[in-house]
Length: 356
Image (cartoon, rainbow, N blue to C red; front, side):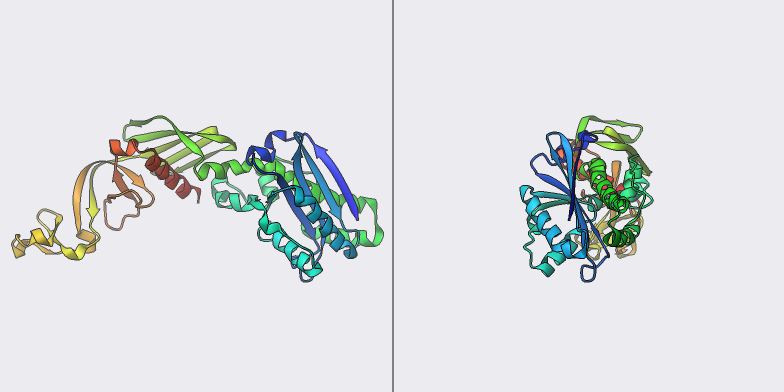
């Protein structure tokens, strides 16, 4: 079995302790001879962790299929010093593959007990917002202007590994280690992309007093983890811009008259002359010629004011211009601005709607 260990001082501002200060974190990536653990083997496992302000790596490679059990044993022994695994799509591939191979060899595997962070799962919903062509690790590296030495794909490596097991050629060995090394150090390099997820799950604060001018509400946000690249989304009635640790959200308000639709329309009558619905307890005093049973689409009362749009009807009472409208509104009041929790939930609702 071959073992290589290296360390790097580059990208130390992206050390995992930035996001996970209370964890002993370990980046993990495996190389296999196929997609199924039933008929394929793990021939390499690579790990990176933080030590004394540096990123240190260790890679184990089985020089033949017969060393796979030894490779796994070394890996399980090594990870006992950690409590947090970071991987890229490892939830669907690396972790189940390792667990299945451990079971085949009768090895104890406790990966399920680790706190885990899957970079892929944390970033996949932002594909459209970030303008990504794909969600491969290499695509995220390109997005962040990170360039790797390795140019080979996983399929190429399988043939290279098979050739290596027969020839033990040094140049083939170097190619195998290089690909895995670029994967594990690449994960450390793209870790900063988690800042997008941190922001969209609510790790931000509302700065200053909201500014309302010409029916546009401007909210300024501040967050701890600066995003690596600016993002911008303009989807009326919302405009969002984020750069570094600052963001702004513009919300176009509606000033005028909107309708509140009563859900229990069977208990209401519609008055065509007044263009409004009234409860049956009141409608009984109205001449039958001037009333009719309300339908869901006309069971409303009107209200004039200044209203803010919301992607979902989470703030009530909610108002619409028409029954079939997808956008609903709530009245902009001082009570809303004096409720920080409700304001934050409202902002999150908008941001997460814009992210998909």
